[in-house]
Length: 347
DNA sequence: AAGCTCAGCAACCGCGGCCCG
DNA sequence: TCGGGCCGCGGTTGCTGAGCT
Image (cartoon, rainbow, N blue to C red):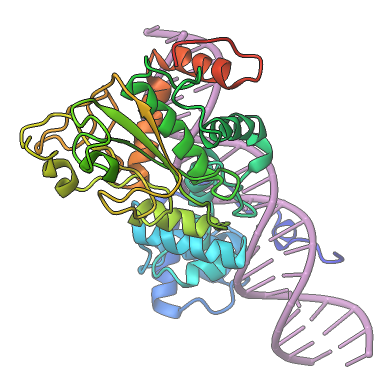
């Protein structure tokens, strides 16, 4: 540009942090005379600053209607929604958030929300899942799905008679995280359930031993669904994501017929699947695992693993899982067993 | 206790757009 | 129509304090 910056014209003007005396002078002047001409304001207000610096200080800090402090969930949602819509138009976004400045929103985005999105595998610029980074993991997940779809569960290395429910839950958590991040890429294995509380039709008809714990895996059709980050964000807040685990208290308390005191939980995850409903592609594997779930503690009894009533719970469990000392071996098992050249392992 | 690292944030800088003579 | 000047925006910098070694 042909024009030199205004500050270069004002040799000797002060830069850097403002001191309270300067704030007082600026505030007093504007309250008395209004903003007017920013270029002439510093001289009139008795400040050795350039006009730009004064304007910035007033707009971002001294203005009486500035709202400071933590951003609320609602504000975060608004920012996400507007950023998806407008991009880095911080002033436009700020105009929808009374009391917030563009600078504050920009800083908040760059320091907090950007990081959050990256942790969730979302590209903060495009708001799309960062599938490129996940491709190796997607492969693993797809191998898992393939194994399930091929009906190998009952005798596969991946899931066998020694498979504990805890392992299944870990596996499900891994899968669920992948599905949340990339719902389109990850097929929907919606539920791992024991038969203990909700007898499936075969069981009710006496074709299965109702006393023997089973784990049912329901693979439902994967809907075409490519969410924006906005959708995912709201899903996390509102528990509206497809594929999120839902465990109702009724479900946990209903009990299997004739056993009101059972401690074996029905852990039903899925896309709005009603308790007791089993999809067409139901697979069954025997399970030696059991989990306790009392009405008081409706969350799963795997240490650190909780019932996923919301997407945020999934994230919470995910963090615990990553912190868990045993997760290294869990990952190793998972990767070993899903690799094409794998040998039999604990899963 | 000292040094180091890093996250958070206030402030700076440069550019584009608009207004006006 | 053009050029100069100002304002506002978005990217970037650098200071500060907290946490860690």
